[in-house]
Structures are given as structure tokens and as C-alpha cells.
Length: 496
Image (tube, rainbow, N blue to C red; front, side, top):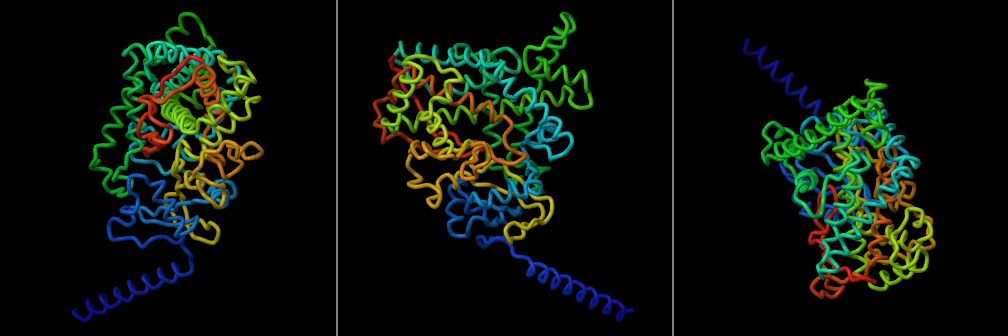
């Protein structure tokens, strides 16, 4: 009997040794991307710091444009060059198109209904098509243009009131409120936030809290087995935020359905359009998807645009010659003191250069939204192992000296005779991503940002609060899903 046990034990040991040898041989046959040696348990997490986009850019200088790190238990591949980004997001787009979903975004099953997080599938294609045709198409945006004009006018009036009182404007907050009201009027035909009252303050804070929670490092994302324990209570807090926003949207949908029951179908805004589609083809979209779609639009569409306006104003206050040149162009093309029309932007080439240069230095999402590969993929000779998280460091690409001359300098002129565009074709500059998962709200952002920025520049002269010299302006970044200014820009508007 003992002999049988020994034989079994020896056989098991031989089998185990054989399996390990085979695994080594298989690994040897594959070439993995280079990267720093991982420590036990933490892997390379200790190398990230609180500015991961910067740490990863420094590591890429040592290990190359495709590198692999072990972040906790998760294989993470970081792409830091336009050529490699093109390979992943254009040539092998489908293999790299699945999202890696942060644990907080699974709260209230959001990732199962949200177009941002759904895998490429018939359901995703349907929602994406509805958005492209009914919210962000050229004709729909043209139809809602007057509404955006009104919201820009309200922003300028708010700045005028501050100007008369000699008070500074918190540029980021004012831009955030404007963007949020643009969206809420486009979707619901009503304001959800007001600069002079606290009534809608809660909604604004909720959207802010969602963005902040989504951007915080969460242990569960590095050690998935901790999901059940939620050690930082991140999932719990996000569930609370989501519940409040989804309940608010549900009330608005119920209100609208009651209005339609009483006075018949109208077609005045996005909510009506979505309800029409849901009545005609209930298998395509229902109230649950509508609520989560609205949540996506507010979460992804407010912070990104307002941060871009705030960074652009910061860079211009830091570079008075560029600001003077922008204001001279505006005075020349549309007349001093006038509000911009969206049609004016095509004739304002320097303003367009400023927006591109801001996207280059301060991309709204510095690492884009993470992706993952569902099976082993070969990228430029490297094997990317199944289930690896993929990060595209667009922040690093925007500051790469091999692509840009004097990359740390704010110089809008670099785009004046350049064909480089931000719509996902030129991989040196992809603030909205590229390929099939490019940001669907890009057409709206590209209308809103220049008009908001141009109107602020053409209505006032601006002075940094507290007589701070431009060179002393704090340029520190606060890392999250979006890249905000760590210290809000406060500037005093002076009538022209």
C-alpha cells in the first residue's frame, strides 16, 4: 500500500515538474513587453505615486513605448507612443476595444447599461447609434444651438455681475455650471444648477462626487479578490451617489411621461426623442438604459469640457502675448465685446490653435479610459497576456520631445500651419481617444469649448486674483479619471 502512495506521489511530482517546464517553454516562446521587475504582493504599485500619468511617462523613457507592469495582481500594459497607439486603436481596434471596468463603476450595475463601459456588442452598437443619430449628429446640434447661445450669455452675465462687484470668478466652477446647464437643457429642457441658489447645488455636488470617486485609487482594482470586502467603502459611496442621481432622472422621466399622456407626444429635447424610440422599439432601449445614458452624459460631459476651458484660461493668463493675440483676432473677426456664434469658430484660426494646444498639454483624460484584452494579443512583436489592462498615456504623447518641439512650452502657433486634428485620425493628439470607442460626445465638446473660451476672452480683460504674476501661477495637476487643476483658477473680469 505504501509503495502505491509513493508511486502516486512521485507521479504527481513528475507531472507538476513537467507542467512547470512546459509553462516556461511556452513563456520562452513568447516575448512580453519590457518593464520594471515586480515586487511580491505589490508588484510595481509603489512606482505610481499620486501622479501616475507622470510616473508612467518617466518609466516609458526607460522601458519603451509598450511596457508591462504588475499593478498588484493585474498585468497592465502602458502604450506611450502614437505609432503603438495607432497599432492598438486602429489596426487591432477590435482586440483592444473591451473596457477594463473600475469597481466603483459597477455600482448599481451601471456598467451593464452604460455605453461607456458596455463591451462591443449588439446592445452597445444600438445605444451608440441612437446617441450618434439623435444627440450628437450635426443636424441635432444645429437645432439646439440657440439653447447653447443662451447658456453662454448667462455665463457672461454672471461674470459681468462679478466684474461690477470687483470679485474674481472661479473659472472652472463657472464653466462646469455652464456645461451642466447646456447638457440639462439639451436633455431635459431645464436647468439643473443655478449660480445664485442652493436648490440645484446638490445635483452639481453629486456629479462632482461621482467624478472624484471614480478617479480615486481603489485597492479592489489592483486586488480583485477584495471586491466582496470593499475595504475603502468606495463601491458603497458610489452606490449612494448613483442612487440619488438615478432617482432624480426617474422622477424626471415619470413627469415627462405624465405630460405626454395629458398633451400627446412632443419632440422638444433628447428625453422626448429617447422616449419616442423606446415606445417604437422597446427591445432597443428602455427607461433603465435612458437613466444610465443620462448619467453617462453628465459624468463624462461636464468635467472634461470645464477643465479644458479652465486650463486654456490658465495658460493664456500665464502667456499674456498669446491672450493679446487671441483677443486681437476676436476683435478683428467678430468685433470686440460680442458673444461668439458657433459658425464664427471656423474663421478664428488662432482660437482653434489655442484649444488644440490646451488638449496637447492638458488632455481631459490623461490615460484615456482603460481597456483590457480578452485573449492573448500580439502587438508589434510583443505578447499582451489575456486579461491585461491597457492604458494609453496620451499625456506622455503630448509632451514627447521626439514629436513636439519645446514640448513643455505653451505655443498655439505650432498648430497654425499644421494638419493635425483632434478627431482621432492623428495619433499624436487623441484627447477623445480613437477607433470605435472614441468619445461619442466629441462633436458637442468641439462646439462648446471654443465658444465658451472665445466669449470669455472677447467680453473682458482678465486679471489673476491677488495680483499674482503670471509666472507664479500654480500649474499643479490633480489626477483622476479627468485631469483637473489642483488649485482652482480665480480671475477678475475687467470690462473691455
